[in-house]
Length: 304
Image 1: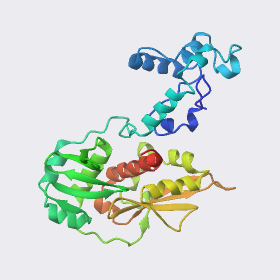
Image 2: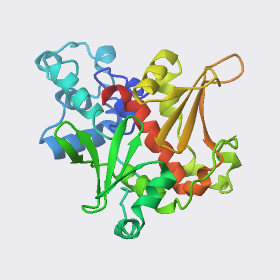
Image 3: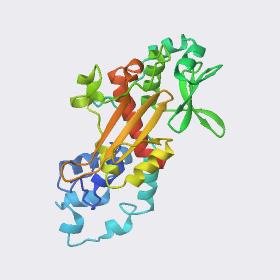
Image 4: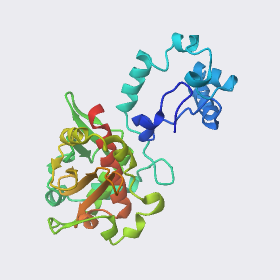
């Protein structure tokens, strides 16, 4: 169990689930030493509770320290305080790190923009059922409009003050992969498939396996919250599994998320299905990234 010395259980914290924050661990753990090093490097000082627990060889303050609750807890600002809650709210509204399966930062090759700006905007918008603009293309990504700005070579989102730049490497990468690949108005509705049915199905093994664990952990006991997240992202309910919704990261690219509750035989699980046309829109790596992108948005739906 990923529980910090102060008693916070990181297993049920969405920052940990999304990979944005790591656990402090028990005061006697290696995680505690690593966390303190990071805190000192970033903030100039470590958490006084964690430092005290490590110094006194205490695993968990509430269980193993006779001085609990001590002044370290009373003085704050962590762990249970306005400062902690403000930090949670701020970081939950941010995107977690965009990483490759090998843990490296995602980078968008400039040549992807080079090839895209040479394409016929009118034809491309027809193939994708999106809106052509003098400077690029506007498409609905889940619940918000995104502008592919060919002139400035960036993505922008619609805001009250106008279009503003989006800093989201994963969204940028998947968008460029999709709009560079599409070259026709592909037929849809021929059937649904899973990763096992894809021609490149072997790709989705090991580090490339779709990570549905965070969704299972978040929604396995609360189908209502899953439905609310789907509604906020303009997901449409479908009559499949215990709860299922289809999401549209691009107008002609549906992703079906199926949530199964735990029963006497099987643990709770989430499956993702695709329209059979998906491989004409993206290669295996692009599909993997698209699922990660949509999954991230489902987990963050109520915080954005």
